[in-house]
Image (cartoon, rainbow over all chains, first blue to last red):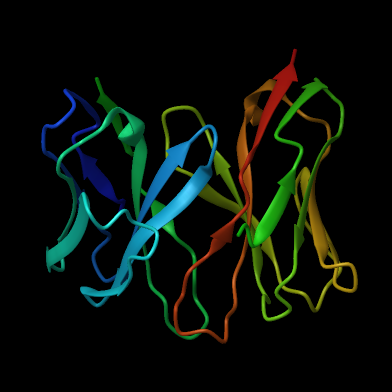
Length: 115
Length: 114
């Protein structure tokens, strides 16, 4: 049963600390998305990759957020330094974007709390 | 700018009732409209989707109605059940774009009372 996995599931940290979230996309999917979910903003697209190359990261605060895909089985989202306003649930999703296909498969999310 | 506008933000329905969630869009390039369902503590998952060449698609108790001229689409849940309590997101997609991204609405939190 192929699924997107994310670690950690929960993270509590103090303001100013570095946070790294990891995602393993579904094997064979060529596109990986990072979303942030809050009550106020809903699902915000932060960044996404196609075949490991960054396609768009305009949704991400550039000064503190960075997203990478070091290999096809791992995507990372890093926040440095973290701030209380970064508290949210962060989702990774993957999909096979080809020939009109576009279903995105979401991971279970990382719930981040910055104190 | 929110490309897809969704309402209401929250909805409370009695068991057996009909739940209706509405979405509207402006970009006429959108040609695929999925709905995602999210249970607490889980990621969203595809529920049902429609292409604009049809005005309605039904899967079980879930129906999407699509009005191309008004650029609106809606999700109807018939005979709503407590197990339907979840957050629902509408989305839109341009199949002709190479970007491959979905534009999501802000979500509707549905509560079905037993």
